[in-house]
Image 1 (cartoon, rainbow, N blue to C red):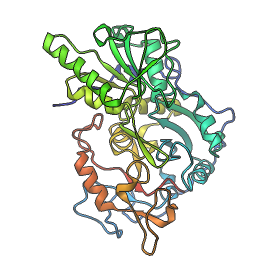
Image 2 (tube, rainbow, N blue to C red):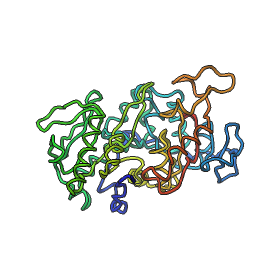
Image 3 (tube, one colour):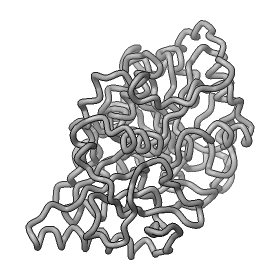
Image 4 (cartoon, one colour):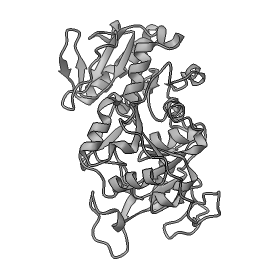
Length: 393
């Protein structure tokens, strides 16, 4: 079944995010603006990105053009700004990755402007505090755009007819152990029965918010079954299933050495049963348009860095933004192998001791059918512009 994803909400593309949708949370201190460094010589023809095999030669069987790099400094001079994912790139939810703090500082010193772009169901306001607690200099970042912030803005401002017609009664799927998301200020009425809902809203994967306050913890599979059941009942009765607004489109994310299910897994379950889904973050081009408006830059002037092929890479390419895929995030176990003479692979092995298994990456991209089945890919772009083992300078 073809997934029913609503990405466009495209009426907003012509409006000013600065005046109508103030998404950014700016740092207290402005970053210094230095001259960007000249691009170093690449192992490919300048201006092109040739597919490489694991030994650095060109591959005729690569699923798309991508250049393997060892550090960001190799391509930094081609861009004016970085759109940085958090989880799987800068940190694992608990600790920064080796070299990431230094890479952020070096990128800022080189003249690059840095913006956090995160599929987090949380609002933007605490993100820089968390990064600072991990050792990142908060003054390196010009701002933060999260999918949770987009969700809040669209549900409160109702900027077009689709959102105005959405209604206010919602079945709210929330976090519990990871800290529930508050709906205060949304102007919504929480309902317990899917049949009473104008729409469904997914901030988490652990519980249902209750009408009188509080939470009812539910296993993920129960929540998927609830959504599938609602879609199937609507089909049986000949009514339109309520849309599911997803505040975090990721399917999984890193949490230390583990992977944790995210609301994108609920979106997949609901869509498979015929339910319409609205993704509020990556891979929707909407979030990239917001970043471009905040920075005042064209897509070609920005480089998106992320660890999800289906979200970071697909979303960036569909928005006309080059992408750097970091293999050491959610796909680390599949894609990172020890360098020659290195020790046994470990979850947090130093970046200098691992490399990307490019053949495995190509198989993974083919298996995911990136560009054809993934939402928001823009039809046919199959591979990241660059690939690196970790986010290092």
